[in-house]
Amino acid sequence: MTGHTGELQAINTAWQIAIQEILRMMIRDMYRTDGDAAFMDHVKRIEEAAVDSIYTDLRLRGTNEWTEVLVKEKASNFVTALLTSFTFDQN
Figure 1 (tube, rainbow, N blue to C red):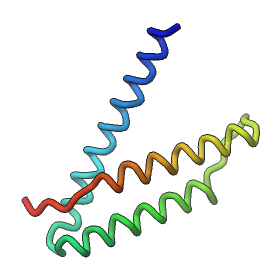
Figure 2: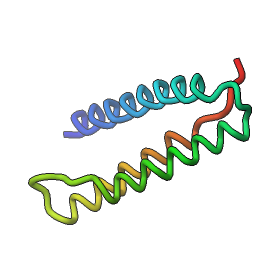
Figure 3: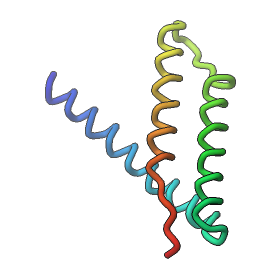
């Protein structure tokens, strides 16, 4: 069981890193010309909109309320962790 848990953690971590890198490149390319302050404003706006969407629009079929709340909380935490890890890179 421990090996299975470790593999699941590795998959989750790999998935998070992959998504982070894709989003970082996309956001950086979209907002490169506006400078650091504008970049960070855009990232903050995206974070707030994504978290709001998770809490207001996400509906999970076949789950109980506890599971839905937990998934929404985890998804929101992932959004915040991913987007707050971005830094402006002029290159």
